[in-house]
Image (cartoon, rainbow, N blue to C red; front, top):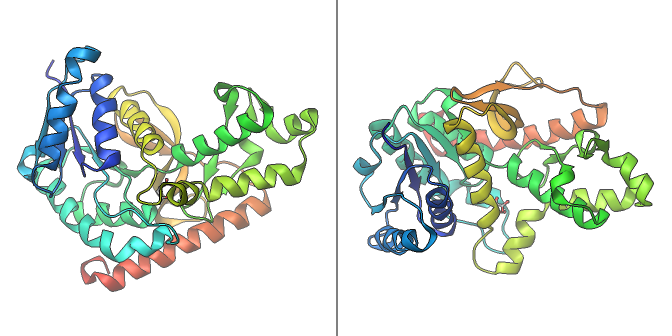
Length: 320
Ligand code: LMR
């Protein structure tokens, strides 16, 4: 059987990390694309030379030509500009929307059968725009955010409880912005609801609220610390988990920015929801019962995403 082909659009810090992870896992041959001449080629050469040391067999090439992503099975898009300290993800909308247009056209013309995972911010609006520009079916275009946000929530909870992260199953819904919705009612410590476990461990409700707030602002905390750029290890790891779910037809239920129509009271919006990922792409959006407060929080978050879509439409008439 021919090896799978993984195209990474954007060869910055996340793109390079994605290439390294995908090669180590021998997920397939990798094309690292970027418009900056020499940079993807240099990273591809450097990463290829890890092969003999780490013992992986993967062909890694760098390219500035969309023709080289032809026939890709999976495309992971990180192209665009990251935010700087003091900026919100939404401040990137104008500049990254233009990037999504050329990436969407590159995908449409070269690998229209691929499963496309978008990481570029502001995530929920960019994945929607990328889908529009590429014309791919909605089930083949998805955004990476919920896996990352849930991993942040899980990390902070594990630190607080002094337990293994392996035992924390955390759950974050909604848009990938400061209004995201960490859902404590579906978050468990090896099956024990987190609020029950907090009582057992003497952790106050207000402390859990602080952890929820830190999760919401988790990306910004890293942007502030790095000073130049945003997180890349955990975003890349999250997208690789999604790509593996697709390539391996794993039917994993992952929180992803999926296209939601007729569930959660939504009518054609990309936003973070529990999603089954398998060989069919995003095969099913799972609608879970939410409390009134959680529903309200989700509404605030989805309203914020809808506003961004309106902004996209007014910036690019072809989206209206
Ligand atoms: C993240 O959450 O780390 C990314 O969305 C990058 C950012 O700007 O926060």
